[in-house]
Amino acid sequence: MPRSCLTMNQVIQAISIKYNNRVYEMKQNGIDVTVLSLGEAFFDIPLYTFDDLPFPDLYHYSHSRGLIGLRRKLSEYFGTEYDFHFDPTKNIIVTAGSKVAIYMGLMSIINPGDEVIILEPYWVSYTEQVKLCYGVPVTVGYDHPVDKIEEYVTSKTRCIILNNPQNPTGKVYSRSDLEYLYALAVKNDIYILSDEAYSDFAPSNTKFYSLGCIDRSLNNTVVCNSISKNYGISGWRMGYIISNAKKVDEVLKINQHLVTCPSTILEMYIEKHFDDIIRITKPQIADLLEKRLQVVTMLERYGIGYLPGTAAFYLFASIHPSKLTSIPFADILLDENHICVVPGIGYGGSCDGFVRISFGTESLERIEKGIFAMRKLIDKTTA
Image 1 (cartoon, rainbow, N blue to C red):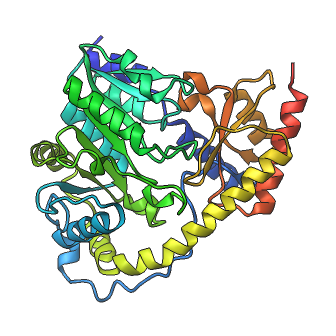
Image 2: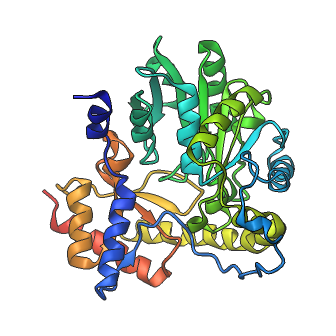
């Protein structure tokens, strides 16, 4: 059998998207579903006019690095917000979503058979994207200390994937964690791919450090981030990748052959309204983080444990002491209670005793309904 067929047989669907597709289908059939599975937050953002965008340019390709005005906006924002400075002409490509940015970053780093270390719980697509690059994912259990990751480094290791803040726990990595990982990368001449899609979702009392603040040369670092997530426009599929000029040029070739450029009209829209969107969404992010504290209180009230974290709009909730693993637990919750969560097994082999709860799209009342149903199902299925 050709190698490509073998690879595709090893790749699985993104479990979060698989469950959300079931939600869409149930809603099409008139079923009211409490959706605690969506990987987005719903913000109240006005629809600005498209009439003042440059016509007919909006119908045509943009620069394959992305509009220079948007790249400059992002560079200025990173410098102001994170003290992370990079050249918008050489160090960044705007991409059609951060998901493809991660994939193209991996394609530029690893060759067939190379190993990529991935810390659990991880975002569901990391392992599968590594497989699609013919690489070997090496996963590290969620309870393994960050400062012991060197135990997993071999002569085949080419990259470590870091998710900061972390989906699904909301963990924000400390500066000392990042400095350790950066030193490890330099020592072993490998890259760290830092997925920072929830960088704006860190609370004010938790300092977020981009890895670009540690590796200012970007010699060992690829940073991927999301306009879609941070600005509440997930359906627009806009992201970007930042690295040293040589690495960005390598990614540029991949981008040109796979995508060409992101949607020109959306780039123009975001560039024009960049500052307004941030001004509008920042207070809503702060409200969402207050909501997080209320959902934590709910979990504790119902005696449901969770992994620690402070950022983003997710909580990784334990289903212990249920005798069920995470997929049958989530299936029963959806089929019988019409409440959708994401099974923890999608986030790593050590995570089958958890489910991911997203609280970005539902009211507190409906979230509590979902948590109460979880508690009842745990009690019903306890060995």
